[in-house]
Amino acid sequence: MNNIKQYYKELGKLVYAIAIVDGSIQPEEVKVLHDFVGKELADHEPTSDSSGMNKAFYVDFEFDTSVEEHLNSREAITSYIRFVHSNYEPTDKALIQRSVKLLEKVAFAYNKQNEKNIIEQVKDEISEIQKTILK
Image (cartoon, rainbow, N blue to C red; front, side):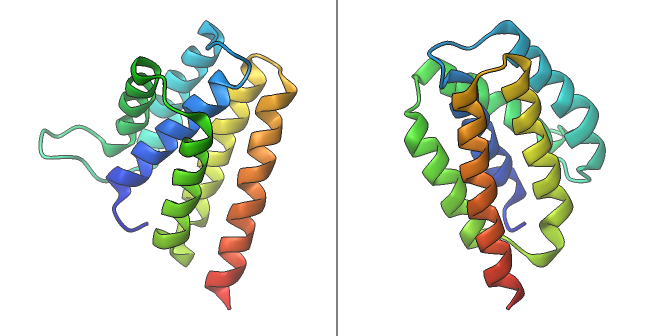
């Protein structure tokens, strides 16, 4: 993925959009997010920023910033899809799979249909991007 730090920021915004879609963010959703980033994303991310922090933790930071700023969910979804469309590389399949797994875990932490609908939309868009790149 070109600009992995920005990718993780976009993912953090998207996780926020998933969590807030039902009107409020539940503690279970936040716990799942933090656990997943620490155990799944960071373990697979080899890059660090200038302070030595694993870049996967930008998901957490951007999520927290989105909460504070009451980010527009629709804009977060669109921004993520645009970023992936512009920066996706064929070697990013595992990263995208981990990202979708994170979205599903957050959505299922507080079982709501609206969250699942967003995930399906994102999965469909990513599938189209992957098809386009592989042509």
